Amino acid sequence: MSDPVLALDGVAFAYPDGHQALFGVDLHVERGERVALLGPNGAGKTTLVLHLNGILSPGAGTVRVAGLDVGRRTLAEVRRRVGVVFQDPDDQLFMGTVRDDVAFGPRNAGVRGAELDRRVEAALEQVGMAAYADRPPHHLSFGQRRRVAIATVLVMEPELLVLDEPSSNLDPASRRELAEILLGLDVTMLMVTHDLPYALQLCPRSVVLSDGVVVADAATYDVLTDEATMAAHRLELPFGFDPRTAGRPGARW
Ligand SMILES: Nc1ncnc2c1ncn2[C@@H]1O[C@H](COP(=O)(O)OP(=O)(O)OP(=O)(O)O)[C@@H](O)[C@H]1O
Image (tube, rainbow, N blue to C red; front, side, top):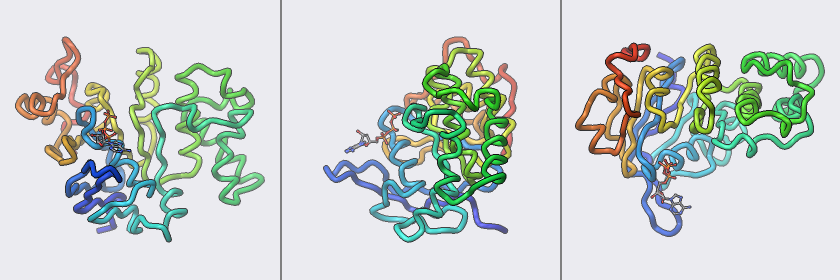
């Protein structure tokens, strides 16, 4: 069998002030999976994500991406393979046009000419933003900027797409449209979210992190209908939302 796209084994991490944020986390993601990373505020989700592209290094344990150990020597290659879309699109957009923002990563990696144009076009097409290529990003709506931020990562053709709260601050129509876009992508995905219906819609599997420990790793439907786990880890469904009647796109993984 091929290497998992992502393999965390026994990952522990303490911040310099001594706060222990992760305690021996094991998480394996196979190629083609879409996995939601759930958990209450302060659970360690962002800390975990920052290990995936080497911004943080574990105090103990290992992080492997597509068979590569994440470390100083592999950092450039790891960052090509793992695309992280942060919560605030404005952290990722800083050029004069959408096209230049999306071209920035591959251009830095030495891609030029027709190949660069092809990749930029394809990434913008994937997020439905091809018509906006010549616009300044700061003239776009928040939802459009989030899509462009996703394109800046897709253009690198990552093996793992990591999304931090992709549905936050979107109106219902933008939220639904983004779900359709994400469901159409052919990429392994790890999605950090507090939006549990979104997790159910997009991710067949969910991992729950709480106080730096993985406390559940199962089909999203099973997690969201496990009342004891939900209550113990401060996971609450929106008023009136019942996974049992919401359809079961993620029932098996
Ligand atoms: N730079 C830091 N120094 C010390 N402790 C930190 C630092 N950053 C985060 N922490 C602590 O580590 C723990 C995990 O934080 P983290 O941001 O990873 O949680 P999270 O699950 O992403 O939370 P949220 O859902 O609120 O984004 C928290 O207790 C937090 O206070």
